[in-house]
Length: 219
Image (tube, rainbow, N blue to C red):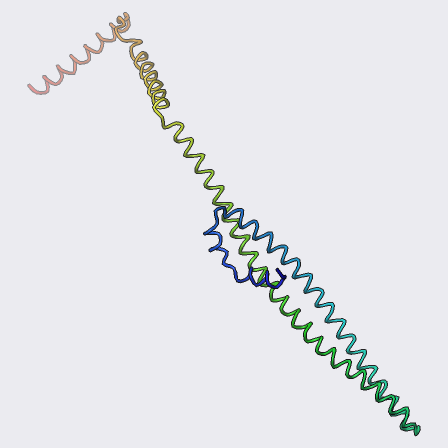
């Protein structure tokens, strides 16, 4: 397949449609990017060659026109000196160089067309390559996110089992038992002498408050 045929195929391709139909989109987009990069290198080389050819043809045309001008000057000189034979020869040389310049003008136009086409193809290929690279970035990100989600779901399923829940319940029961033991540490303990006197003091305070309320009522 020729370089320009490949370029036309790449430019006219629908990347999204191709990836949607692919069994392995990531692999396909890598292949597409590699092909675009290789084609871009080749088309740039062709463009550089065309630009060099265009410059050479321009130089050849200028040289041919300079020679034609020089022979025209010589023909005029021969006429002035009465040498029509030499003037005729000079004009024939002049015509030869003019005709050569005219032929090269056609070659120059072809070279210009080729360079313009190559430059246009390069721009379109660059755009296509940028789109493919962006698509690759999105696919890689999606692949990474999918793997992360998969690992998270595996962890969830790992802990969302009867064994795991049973271990959690056993642990919670152990905590409940420890809390109950802590509550029973002082349960049923006999009052100390100080506690008993404190209870008597509390009783006296209550009796005094009660008597005060009764006295206030009867007054």
